[in-house]
Length: 418
Image 1 (cartoon, rainbow, N blue to C red):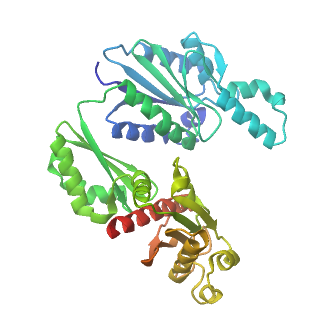
Image 2: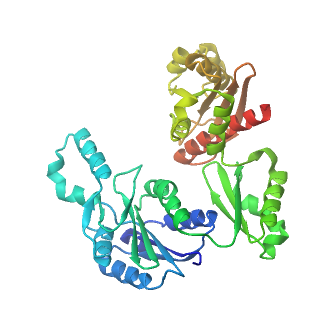
């Protein structure tokens, strides 16, 4: 069996009318590339059941068992009248809607919390938590509506996911990617990747990629996913030695800002060394703690967090001196140092991360612009190192980039202290 061909379909009249931008398709294509697959084409369709059915029916005829086709579709899984994905796929696969028990339980819990009777909107709710009877569920760990995986015809497969980016990306990474890996063999390509921290895509391409002959000659291909605070750079080639050389050259060029998957490697390092960690966060509001606790089993090394948004909390809970705040300000190297040391003491951890910055859109000064952040990394017996960084991004992106970078800085210090 040959590697599957991929078609990515985004649905939504807001996309075809130009009111919203389709960011899902490019993200999916980049992730598939990282897994050794390539996308043949993109389709964007309005919320029209007739058009969606026609395109899916046509695509279902393009694959067979020797030349499989996978359609990855986002959108149309919500509770409103213009969400047609479930209806169309049930018709194409001779299925009927069946409730996913896990999604239904979550929806009931939400209605109870909101003080509404679930029965008031039973019809709509069931539609939102249903999947075709002939499909396999793709759980939604972020939202309500589950996705699903179904065979349209022998050799033609369809994955349906929500259009909400956060729900889609979590579902793809946790559930769809493992399905694809188990069912299909990627092309005869060897692949590897690196994270490059604090680097823009354009700068990376100009500084490094343009000078690599094997890429210019087509002996290897590369792709980059711009994440929040770092790039995920992937290389692929039929020759594994070329991939290894590209990885080596990238590490040689960028040194310490090159890592593997920090979100996998940092927990392993903490477990191997039997170290515990906590966070003291101001502008990120607990996002660094969330990154730790997103991983199952994190209770073995992550003990807690103190979200010290107000100066009073910095003083009372972390022991930051009032004189430090008055002299240097809440966003300062000195405050970050005292926050980290106070967190390690209060939480009784071996390690601590502190974060204090100006997320914006207001609050900046001529000497401390919006986007300025101080990140402290405390190691018991070895003191605290504070990093001053500048992320000139919008508030949400600033907070996410700061949180991810704080984990990188902790990882980098630990690997250098080895």
